[in-house]
Length: 298
Image (cartoon, rainbow, N blue to C red):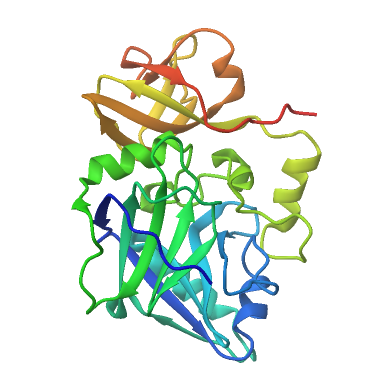
C-alpha cells in the first residue's frame, strides 16, 4: 500500500460523518444493500456507492473502504447519515454486522492539489486513509483520520474552493434537499464509478438496470456557470416552459466571482432555448463542458 501524498490545501469537512459496519458479514451485508461491489473490496481501493429505495431513487451517496478485515467504514454527508444508518439497520436481521455512527471518532478532510492518482485508489498514512477522487484540473482526495490527529499539511482551503472543484469534476453528492430526487444515472453516478452492473441484487437494482439498458434515461447531471447564488435543491426552469421545472441544483460553488452549478436537467432542455435559476426569468445558466463523456442513449 502506498504512502498518502501531501496536498497543497486542505479543508475540514465538518458536514461529513462516518458509519462503521463491523462483523464477519459486514462486506456481504453492504454488498446486498448498496449499488457497488463490496464483496471483492481490497485494502488498496475505496468504493463510491449509493443507497436506493425500491424505486431506484438515491437516499444517500457515500465512499466505503476496508478499515480492517472485519470492518468497513462509510463516509457520507451528515445530513443523510442518521436516516441512512436507521434504514440500513432495519435490514441487518441475522447478519453478523453491527452498524454504528462513528463520526465522533474520525475527522473528514477534503484535499486539493494532491499528486494525480486513479480515482478511488486508497493510500494509508498510519491510522488515516486518503482516497483519490474524480477531478478536473486540480487533483482532489478525501482523507479520513482519527479525530484527535492534527490537521493534514497544506494551506487551508475555503469551502467554496472545495465545492467549486467538486462541481468542475462533474460530481454531486445526495444531500438532505435532494434525497430521493435522483436515480443514480441522473447524477452520472455510474460514470464516476458508483454503480456495478454485474453484482447481485440490491434495493432498486431493477430500476437502475432498466434505466441503463433500455435507453429510458431522460435526465443527466450537467455543469453550468451563472452570476447568481445557487442552493442545492433549487429548481431550474427552461425559457420555453416556465410552468414546470426542467431540473434541480445538485451542487454549487464559486470560482473567480462566478457561481458554478452541478444540476440534474432534462436532456431535451439542453437542445434549444436557455436554462434559468429559480424561474424562467431567473439568472441564466451557461453550460460548461463536463470532464467526462456522457454516452448517447440507445
